[in-house]
Length: 83
Image (cartoon, rainbow, N blue to C red; front, side):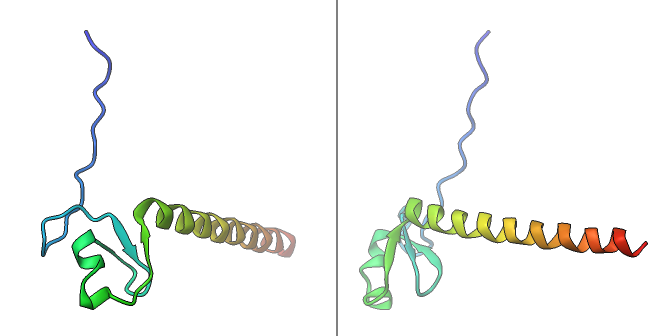
Protein backbone atom coordinates (compact mmCIF):
# COMPACT_ATOMS: atom_id res chain seq x y z
CA UNK A 1 0.00 0.00 0.00
CA UNK A 2 1.85 3.05 -1.27
CA UNK A 3 1.04 6.66 -1.92
CA UNK A 4 -0.38 7.98 -5.14
CA UNK A 5 2.08 7.81 -7.99
CA UNK A 6 2.88 11.08 -9.64
CA UNK A 7 2.14 11.10 -13.35
CA UNK A 8 4.46 13.32 -15.36
CA UNK A 9 3.48 14.81 -18.68
CA UNK A 10 5.49 13.69 -21.69
CA UNK A 11 8.39 16.02 -22.46
CA UNK A 12 7.75 17.90 -25.74
CA UNK A 13 10.48 17.27 -28.31
CA UNK A 14 11.62 18.96 -31.50
CA UNK A 15 10.24 17.28 -34.61
CA UNK A 16 13.50 18.01 -36.47
CA UNK A 17 16.14 17.07 -33.91
CA UNK A 18 14.27 14.92 -31.35
CA UNK A 19 15.69 17.18 -28.64
CA UNK A 20 13.75 18.51 -25.67
CA UNK A 21 12.14 21.93 -26.26
CA UNK A 22 13.97 24.08 -23.71
CA UNK A 23 13.79 27.55 -25.27
CA UNK A 24 11.02 29.93 -26.25
CA UNK A 25 11.51 32.11 -29.33
CA UNK A 26 9.88 35.49 -28.63
CA UNK A 27 9.69 36.48 -32.32
CA UNK A 28 8.11 33.26 -33.58
CA UNK A 29 6.22 32.62 -30.33
CA UNK A 30 7.15 28.94 -30.30
CA UNK A 31 9.14 26.46 -28.26
CA UNK A 32 12.42 25.36 -29.83
CA UNK A 33 15.24 22.98 -28.95
CA UNK A 34 18.80 24.15 -28.30
CA UNK A 35 19.89 23.17 -31.82
CA UNK A 36 17.08 25.17 -33.45
CA UNK A 37 17.82 28.06 -31.07
CA UNK A 38 21.27 28.57 -32.59
CA UNK A 39 20.20 27.85 -36.18
CA UNK A 40 20.06 30.39 -39.02
CA UNK A 41 16.27 30.41 -38.77
CA UNK A 42 16.36 31.83 -35.22
CA UNK A 43 19.84 33.41 -35.22
CA UNK A 44 18.87 36.99 -34.37
CA UNK A 45 15.78 36.10 -32.33
CA UNK A 46 15.29 36.61 -28.61
CA UNK A 47 15.38 33.27 -26.77
CA UNK A 48 14.35 32.71 -23.18
CA UNK A 49 14.15 29.49 -21.19
CA UNK A 50 10.74 27.84 -21.07
CA UNK A 51 10.34 28.53 -17.33
CA UNK A 52 11.00 32.25 -17.81
CA UNK A 53 8.48 32.44 -20.67
CA UNK A 54 5.93 30.56 -18.56
CA UNK A 55 6.29 33.02 -15.67
CA UNK A 56 6.03 36.01 -18.00
CA UNK A 57 2.94 34.80 -19.85
CA UNK A 58 1.28 33.37 -16.73
CA UNK A 59 1.56 36.83 -15.14
CA UNK A 60 0.19 38.47 -18.28
CA UNK A 61 -2.73 36.03 -18.45
CA UNK A 62 -3.55 36.43 -14.75
CA UNK A 63 -3.56 40.21 -15.15
CA UNK A 64 -5.82 39.96 -18.21
CA UNK A 65 -8.13 37.55 -16.40
CA UNK A 66 -8.44 39.91 -13.41
CA UNK A 67 -9.28 42.79 -15.75
CA UNK A 68 -11.90 40.71 -17.58
CA UNK A 69 -13.47 39.58 -14.30
CA UNK A 70 -13.77 43.22 -13.20
CA UNK A 71 -15.42 44.14 -16.52
CA UNK A 72 -17.80 41.19 -16.24
CA UNK A 73 -18.77 42.13 -12.68
CA UNK A 74 -19.39 45.74 -13.76
CA UNK A 75 -21.55 44.56 -16.68
CA UNK A 76 -23.53 42.20 -14.42
CA UNK A 77 -24.08 45.02 -11.92
CA UNK A 78 -25.41 47.28 -14.71
CA UNK A 79 -27.68 44.46 -15.85
CA UNK A 80 -29.06 44.00 -12.32
CA UNK A 81 -29.67 47.74 -11.97
CA UNK A 82 -31.52 47.81 -15.31
CA UNK A 83 -34.03 45.18 -14.14
